[in-house]
Image 1 (cartoon, one colour):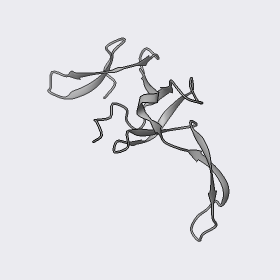
Image 2 (cartoon, rainbow, N blue to C red):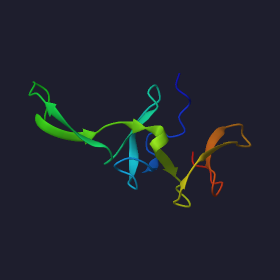
Image 3 (cartoon, rainbow, N blue to C red):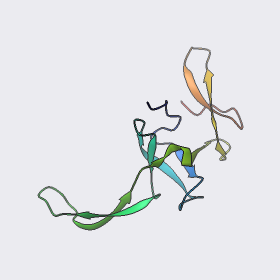
Image 4 (cartoon, helix red, strand yellow):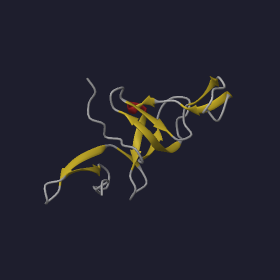
Amino acid sequence: MARKMTIRKGDTVLVITGKDAGKKGKVLRALPAEDRVVVEGVNIVKRHQRPRPGVVQSGIIEREAPIHRSNVMLVCPRCGQPTRVAKKVLDDGRRVRACKRCGEVIDR
């Protein structure tokens, strides 16, 4: 069973392990059932695409493959540092994500 993801589509993340360690990118897709995320420009793989009607590109194409969520850290929009995610309850009762380093609320 998948745990709730602390990383969401549109977040900026830093890859901390693997062949792409040190790269930053935007999360294109979050796959909570598999505990994986697809990050822009990270984990590029080559796939052989057969020509089909309706498919624009064929041949050998490069695209991003999913990586495990434990291999990335969220980058705080305020302090710009990779951080763990805290959960806060606001005065109006909303539960939001917050930066562990500076305390800034990440969700708007």
